Image (cartoon, rainbow, N blue to C red; front, side, top):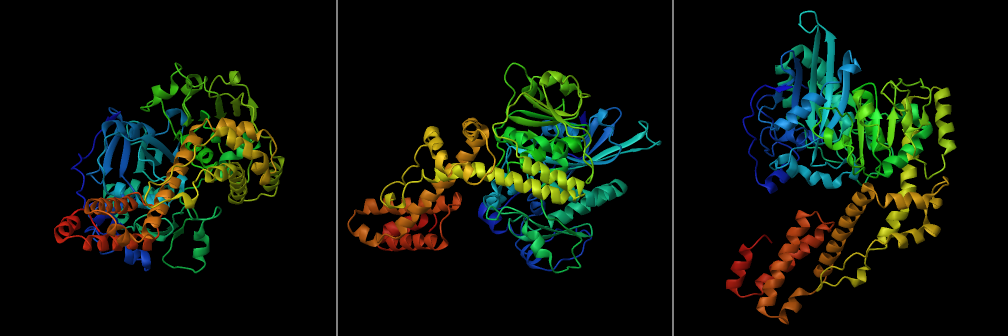
Length: 608
């Protein structure tokens, strides 16, 4: 493996945080303007004239674009990194090289698309797309960026070419991003990759210039994104959306001659296509993912492995899968030794693999899904069986779910009949996916509602919040206390499925997914307490208070109020806008009531 291509020229400089955030909605057009129809509308207007630096718009969507080729002497090599100033460490480049090509045994002729995920090197400098994380707070938890990982979206082409020594043309166009928008970036690659392979670097530069002109990826906003003569219409979900189909479908009733591609989702995969070979066991797989169990997907190609891993992670939505997952994992991955060691128990991770070597290396893992080629819509493969792990000897073993796991819940025969009926009636895969996604959603919600109800009871009563004391603490989560609530308010209220729900909860409370979920909820509730404390302060007559206290105590109050104001902005506390304004007014009024020498000092310290 080798790395070659233009050397980086250093990152672009950035404005102060507040300027970057203010300008996040748009920027002036870059000097190199690619072809593509102008789109009228609020997004276009919003994305002009606020003055972000060149490539800052690109950075809100992508870290960089790589071209990975095969060199007879060097092996897989990064030939191009664009924009040229993009920073990747040698370790990151090595991972990209190996993950951008299918294993040789996959035999992927023609064009193949897949996705991978890898760890970012530590110690990176903060750049604009980190500052744009203000948008992250409005995203559903499962779409929030993980700063420790990059996604790689690959369009790989392998075709016979007698003019080359190797006899084949082999090249991948790879989009590197922190955003988990799988369907969106695969659609972008479908638009640009085929032409790139014909026209090379000038075409890639023009496409990147188009991306740099895109409006920022604001959740909840309908965005028109032109790229190389095609306009994509997308809407990124928000945490306030109701579960179910995206709202973009309702927004496209009126025909728009500019729009070439309308994406109903930015992140979802074809759930039924992925679960089709194993849908008899889909509920058991849901349990394994929910509990964060170590899971391997052995597939014939990176497309199948990555789609299936992503479908598994997606099946517990709206819960976030908090452990690591690798849609496509190779023996060259920098975490290969860490994840395949036999000196300790397998980690909580989902791996998608294609190399036969893994059948031997990972045979000590407790749960392995072996799948064959995924069939197109309308065809259903023979349903695989649950088999003992000892029967899995090689990757050539028959498809199946190899595990000794005993599900906690009884199998829901109704959903199986519904999906089987759909296959018999040749129901489209998209419609089958909607049914399966709704089933998983209802199952996850039935499971999580009792936990949400109990955690809400840990919140102190509002009457205990005093403006003159620190905000009260949340009560401790007590597993046994929670278990007692299940008798009257458990999942039986919303789910028809019978089984050992108590056992499933006990197992879940020890899992990484519970740990991640509870930390997120605890942070949200703590921020809510801080916001209520701020509101309580604003309702007080602070001018009356300072009349009864010394100048030292008054100055101390001003400094504390200013800190509260900064904290509210920094942590995006759920405070009403008029509360912030009231607090600023209070601070100004208190300062004006102090002697002039103190006024000038306090007006200089921090912002009011």
